Amino acid sequence: MDHDELYARTMTVLNRAMDGDVPGAATALIEIGENGDPFDVFGACCAFAEVGKAALTKIYGDKAPDLSRGDMWAMQMLKPGSTDPADTFAVRFIVAYANDDKEQAPALFRAALESSGDEYVSSVSALLATAVSLAHTALNKPAV
Image 1: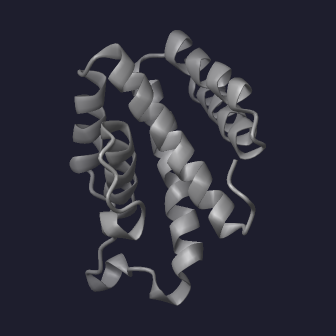
Image 2 (image 1 turned 30 degrees about the vertical axis):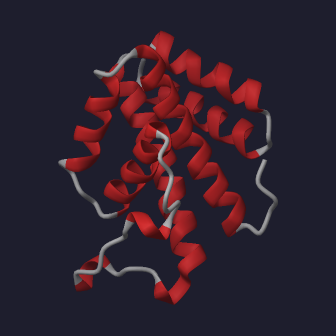
């Protein structure tokens, strides 16, 4: 899948998810997985995490961590206490991405990719859902 196609498909996933069209977002996400490779799915995951990071920055405002000062995002700033592996992946991935951790984010994705097919799908789906939920919170919209 070329960069432009991946971008268009990823934006379709995000737009549909933000609009509450869960089946449409799922279909668009499946298309990325079926027509692309794991690097394409990782790219989409990074886009989802970018949405989450932007939302967190808006939510926390001037209290947001400043990476240039050595501050870091923490899991407790998102969804503390979840025991679901997919939710844990989503939170950890967004935190690693937001902290610009170029080793942890790919390692988390690789672990999800190497898990069972259902776990992988659940993890990527949870990442999208968490990012969209954060975006809705940042926009003061009710979560879908």
